[in-house]
Length: 298
Length: 325
Image (cartoon, rainbow over all chains, first blue to last red; front, side):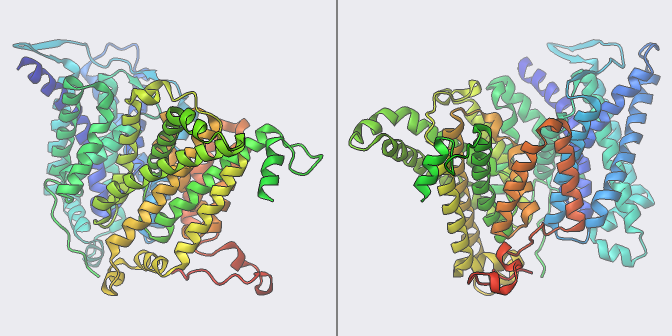
């Protein structure tokens, strides 16, 4: 039982990372109906932004303030990166076929991955520690301070996102664009700005995930975004793509099931489980757990 | 003629007196394998309009299955065919391996296609992507085919002759399909799935058949790949490989067979030609891909075939290609 609880804690912490990335996928899919393949790479850029920022702050003791600066700086950097990607790659092809959009996304993803290998070097880098390490014990269950940080920060960010989407004008406009791009435009919503804001928001969440994973597994490399991105995308589909609570639920489920498979079966199947779940979901409930069936219109 | 060319290439001379370096021959052979992959993927992505991004997974199934057949049963089959000359025995063994590899890849295509092709939109992309990764992980865990060490001890059965024979067969099969009435249903699905369904096309059935043919051909390409390089590792069949094939058909033109051939040759040629600038190469390719999508999303040839670009009197009796939108 204690092993199970321990795995559950590990799964929650990993799942929170997936959930944060999945939110970006689901939000972009909501407004553009686009699988943003480059999203996993924005997460990688977030980890690198955090790495360079914390190197800059080196010399100071690891403190809450410096951790916050690193996190916020990386989120801002990636929000800008997300808007650049949207402006220069996706906006020119937005009116083209969805296939064109998808191939563009794949191209952007490859460009970031290979560009990062060129600029940052292909070797993994060690992420400096941002906060003093501590272990907490709850009975037989051990929670590291990093895991706790991941869970707490993710919950805070998700609550902030929920507030933003439901209570602010921009959030309301995002929901309108996601409901119908053309109708939103007719109602006087500046859809270009809202789509850019959606990319900025999603990218900032991915950057936070990148910094958090850097703290937890202190090793980052330019291709780390591929597998995390794919799994987070599966999480978004599992929860129901376009659905924000669904992305969180899907992320946590994927994280927990992955950790359970590693714990009880074999670590070699680690990367297969997410895709196995994906195929089951598409067979049994293609709209995802919380998704609604969309009527096909001519 | 073909046999003569094959013999010439095996000994390093195509035209008597002109030597081909082994390196150039290898590049040619890899280009041939990629022509099979690109043309077969174009059947599903370009002509049927369904986006598959797991072609490398089917290639992996074909590669491992056919290599397993020739390695395990190779001696028995060779002994049974003792009456044939050496080349004939090797060829028969290769064909047996390719048949098994292609058949297994076709079955996998059926299993993946049926659930995902019922759905519309991006689901096929997602499922094929996931499937490609699952296959890789499973092969990595099968010890009989080497697991993480890689599959060694495969005889070199494939050569220029076999590779280009199958490239020609692939081009023939796909172009015959596309020009048949079945091919018209595929193009109808690409242009407007709902309209096609309203016209009485069984869209799921057509899509699944197209997907199975495409997968089987990818399996054969995989079998040739393994028997040419004599070594297999799952790292050759990652998501990146699937993306490479997509880049080839997108460059050449989705829905153009000659475009796929051109794309495969261009891609392999550029990859090899830019070997010195290996670290810049992919940055350049991906950048060009995005620019191509913005400037000319239909690829170099679009839906057209190369011959139709020539003035009419040079077309050698080739009909106009299936019209595209």
